[in-house]
Each structure stands twice: as C-alpha cells, then as structure tokens.
Length: 77
Image (cartoon, rainbow, N blue to C red; front, top):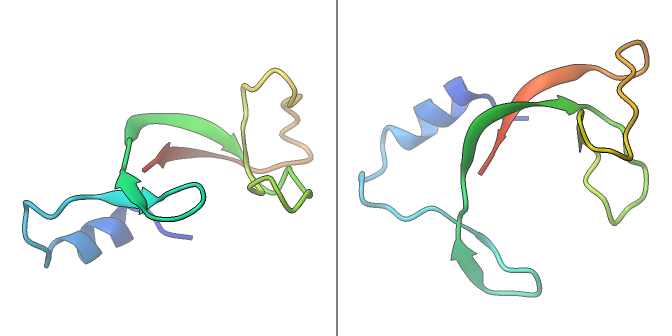
C-alpha cells in the first residue's frame, strides 16, 4: 500500500519532466491515465485471481456494506 504522502516523498527527487507510465496489457508500457478525483473503494472485496482485490464502492455489482468491508478514499494512477 502506498499513500499520497509516500508518493510525494518518492516523487520529490525525480526530474519534473519525468513521464508517468503503466505496464501495457500484454507487454510494453503506456502513458498513465491518472484519475485525480478521489473515490470510495471497498478493500478486499474480490477473491478471483483475475480481479484486483479492491472495488469501487459505487459499482453496480458491488453492494456497499461497511460492516463487511473497509471503505477508503483512493485515486487511480
């Protein structure tokens, strides 16, 4: 897990014109598409290996239940 505070500390030492990228679906790299609008995420919802473990708390297939899952604010990079 990394927080905004951790990210800021790591980024401070990099040149400001360093590009931000993500891994491509089957290889290579692509420019990151950052979603800097925080949203609610339910932690540890998905158990299938092909899904990430967390889910947007407002997805239609996820029923928000704060008694079963921790809900946190997150951004996607």
